[in-house]
Length: 195
Image (cartoon, rainbow, N blue to C red):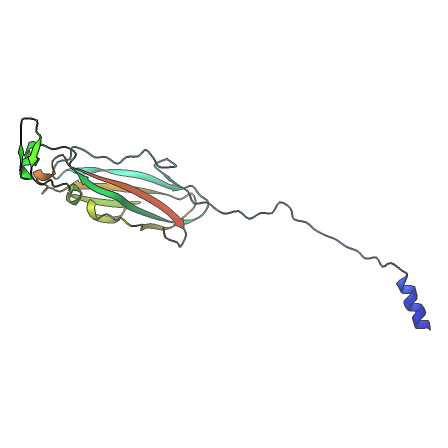
């Protein structure tokens, strides 16, 4: 009976206790960014790599392109050359004759013959990254698939991509007035990934 009385009395009371809570506000998760700037342009649109009036044995003045990772993530930097083609941009009487054609008047046109429009095979070409050579060969064989330029290109990191070359001293009349055309692409992939 005493036990029932004690249980009955405790059921009629409200128990109190101490508490404390802490709250952290304004929390978030945000994705990082990868963003390249080339030659002080973002997007890279107006820098055209040009060299004209080349003669056999003439060098192409080195062209420097400044590259910066504007993002806040480290990435792997890649490059490639795409849309490579040769074209007979201008035809002269010596080129026409060398290609087996007939020059019809003082100003042409060339009739017959087989055009040789692959001057990109006659250009020895170098690509450097921060003064270190990463490619030497003909322009025609320059990497057309994504090729690693630098691992761990850090946020706010900078570097210099340099192009240079020479028109072979053995280039013959078939190539007079011809032009090699190409696009250059630089890409940044999440660190440890490929493009």
